Image (cartoon, rainbow, N blue to C red):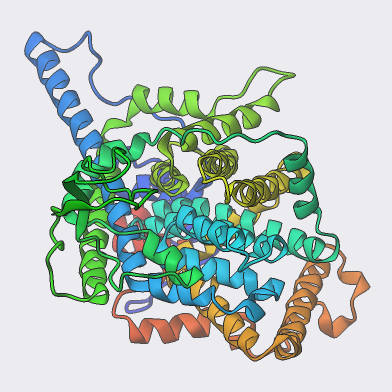
Length: 602
C-alpha cells in the first residue's frame, strides 16, 4: 500500500472510514451488529415493514400446528391476565396516592383566598389530581364545594383545567417502566408527553382568555339554561365490576372522607373503610326499607332500629397502621406490580406482534381512509378514544394502555394523538353522566362543572387538531422523546418539575398573596417567552437578530447545553446516562473487526 502505516500507530478515524463500516455492515447480511446499526439509521418514530421470518402455516406439520395454537392460546391468556393485573395495579396505585395525600388535598381546597387566584387554582388542580391519582375524585371535590357554596363557578374553572393537566401523569409514570430499551423509551415517553403538551398548551391559551372574558363559564351557563335537567342513572361502570373483586380484597377507601375534608364535614379520621354495611330490623318507625342490609344511610331517622355494623373484608380492615403507613405499603406493592405487569406485557406483545400479525394490527390501527377522505381518520380515532374511555370509565387506564403499544411500534404517534384527545372527551362525558346522577341540590352545579370540563377539552381540539399546521404537540413530543432517549434523567426531571416542584412553588408563592406571585412569576414567564422567541428567530429569521444573538455561544456551557449536567448525573449514578454517538459505535466496530479494514482499500 502506498501509504503504509508504521507499527504502533492507529489510523485516525475519518468520515470515509465510517462510511466503509456502513457498506461493510450492509454486506454482512444477518449479523447482529448490522441489524442494530441499520435500525439506528432509520427514523425511530416510523413503523417499519415487518418480514415474517418464521414458517408459514402450510409448511408446519400437524404437531407443529397444534404446538403453535397452544402457544398462541397461552400467550393470549398471558396478555389478558397481565392486562387485568396491570389495571388492578393502577387502581391500587390510585388508592395509595389517596391515602398519602387525601388529607393534604382536602386541606388545600379550604383556603378560598388562594382559590380566587386563577394561577393558584390551576396548580391546585394539578397538585390535587397528582396526589389522589384520580381526576374523577378531584372533580367530585370541586362539584361538592361549588354545590356547598364554598367555591364559585368562576373559581372552579382554573381548578378543572389543572385537573385535566394532572391526570396525564399516569401515562408518564407508565412510560418510565420502558426506560430499559432506549428506542422503546423514546416512543413511549414521547407518546405520554404529547398528552401533557396538549393539556399545557390548551391551558396557556384558555386560562388568560377565561380570566379576561370567562367564555367557558358563559358557554356552560348557556348550555345549562337551554336544557331541562332530570336526574338520571349513572354511567355503566364496566371496569370497576371487573377489578373490584380483586382490588377490594386488598383495600377499600371511603371517598366521602376526601370530600368531607374539603368541605369541612369530615367525620372519620381514617380513609380506610372499616365498616361496609349494616344489618338489622326496624323496631318502630315509618316502615321504610332502611333495615335492609345496605351501605347507604337512611334519609329519614324518625324510627329506632337495632342495627349491626358489618366489617369490611380486606387486608387493612382491622389494621392499627395509620393511613400514611398503609399508603406507603400500597405504593411500593402497586409500583412493583405495575412495573412487573408492564414488562411482561411488553415482552408478550413483542412475541405476539410479529410478521403478518403485527403488520395486520398496525394496518388496522394506523389505517387512513382513501383519498379524499383521509382527513376523517383522525376524527374517527377521536371517537374511538372517547368511546373506549367511556366504556372503561377511566382515562388513565386507556392512556396507560396506549403508551406500551407505542413503545413496541404498534401505534404511531400521529395516531395516538387523536386517541388521547378522544380520551379527554370520553372522561368528560363520564363526568357529565355522573353529574346527572347527583342529588337535586347539587345537580345544577355538578352539571355546569362537567360542562366546563367538556368545553375546555373541546376547545383544545379546535385549537391544536382541526388545523393540521397547528398540531404542535406532535413535533414537540418527538423532540422531547429524542432528548429523553439521549439523556434519560431528563424524563425524571420533567416529571418532578412539571407535576410537583413547579406547582408546589407556585402554590407557595400564592399563599404569600397575588402581588408576590405576580412579582416573581411575571419576570420568569417573560424570560421564558423571550428565550422561546429568540430560538424561533435563530432558526427561521437569523438576519433579524444582532450578530451576537444569532447563537447562544456567548453563554456558559452549562446554560446552553445538557452535557455538563449529564456528566454531573453520570457521576452521581453508576449507570450510563446516555448512549455513545453513532459514529463512535461504528468506529469501535471497525477497530474491533480488522477484516473490515482488510477488505477495503484505505
